Length: 122
Image (cartoon, rainbow, N blue to C red; front, side):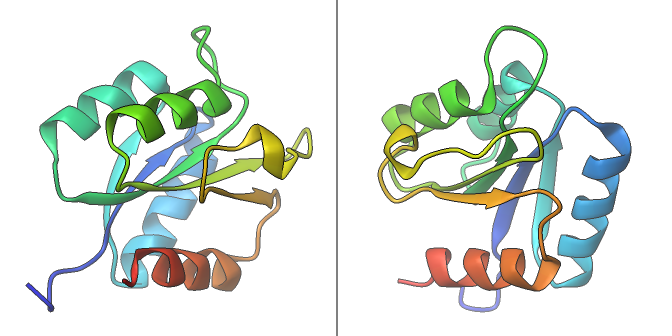
């Protein structure tokens, strides 16, 4: 169990951005799942109980943004850690679920990787 990679769900509607962060996280040794919106993200979470952290964009189509998705995930899967990101707005810590973090785009990949490792290490 100790050698299993940390499982991360990336939720990002911009295909090129999603492909980039997925590839970078896989290169860093994470097991990465992906979704383009909140509905897909919930489906992935239901199907994969190994996911330890969700990395989600705020602005997404479909009526459920990343903040609403983060709140829903916190309620339904409390152990899952959450990082929220946006290139269009800054999110106050009070708007985030408990123990979630915010990272502005463009984010520093090393900072993302460090945050994931910190948040998922008990």
